[in-house]
Image (cartoon, rainbow, N blue to C red; front, side, top):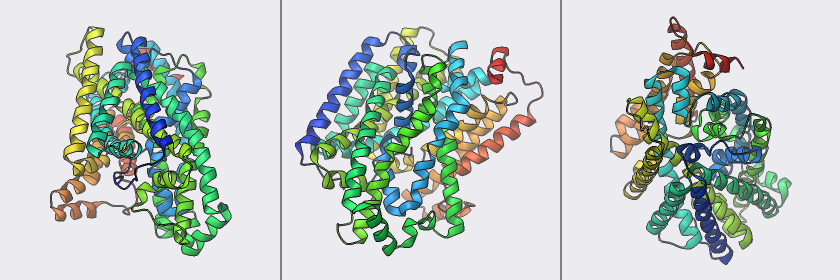
Length: 522
């Protein structure tokens, strides 16, 4: 979901040989998949959308894994540890996002890949709106979001590499980024999809195992609930630990909207529909992705609650920071084999999701933005090589950001799931279901979403980091909602209003290509 939490410096170095074994085997597997992907890649289409070759289970599990990502092992336990059962409904209602995304986009995007030569989200938006401005803004928004996600994931990667292999943080960053770049450049999305698939299987198995160990550690759900209720009844109430009751319901609703409806705006998820073999395999993708996501959420549920319960009961030491609850539980309270499996899955989550981001970001640089500027790369082989070069450029840029500025990484981390949701839900999910949508409406939505996210999320962080606390406080004070209500939800709702309102105002003279009109009616 969102980028991984950054305060991972406190993750202990694993002392089990199984952790080193699983981590090493995973790295070899990644490189092996990359080499295999390289042998399967002959064109830009193969590199970016796997030549439309993946089946139901691979598509569904890949979709679930790029959404869950490392969040399920780091951010998820942190939320549950901090807020108790009040955070659970986010995880167990978020699977609705897969259903919403499949219903609104799966069939239409797959047909779009057949009737037009589309390989990226910006390609699809250009075809829908016949606007270079929409294509260019989509490409720019993708690059901004990708750099944000990638830098934050690389920041987490350096500490996970340290935990598994005992490397100094600097070398964990360099070696991890190098391996990531190698397999991305070699195998493209073919390698990424199969790495996502392996990650998904690992996450499911690992989550079930950790769930069992966590319940045992906490003495069962009855004992966990009793300890939590004794410490603070709000920890086992539906919304109480999020603040005052009315505000808590409001905040919870905001996160639910962002995680469910916002899924339909994540480019690393929705472009997967281009890759399916045919329309038939899309039928069961949503329930498979939703169920497997829910199963993987058992890890966050169990580790967060059991650790908080045992800390409140005085039976275990509190972690240095809530953001490392998941990794610390796995390292200290599960057998070495399980710890090795889970940390390998965390490594897989970071690297495979980073691969998805890199591919869509590189395509934006080599394909979307040049075409929007009227300077397309006509030769397919040349476009493929430029895409691979863009992969290297984005990786180096994000690595330098992590190395030189943790402050900047934190600022970029504010532009994540909510940024993509605000930028793309309206123009993609609504635009591919409504004939009345116009290019002007799409432009207003992208610009509006970008502006709100940057102003309320990034500007206060930048100002605070630069020492201008007065500016940061002023901007924060202008936020019209309670502090816990996600900025991304505000931006998403505003962009939907902008999209619909501007489209209605500019419909006169607007036309939709005949084949696209037929698509919208299906």
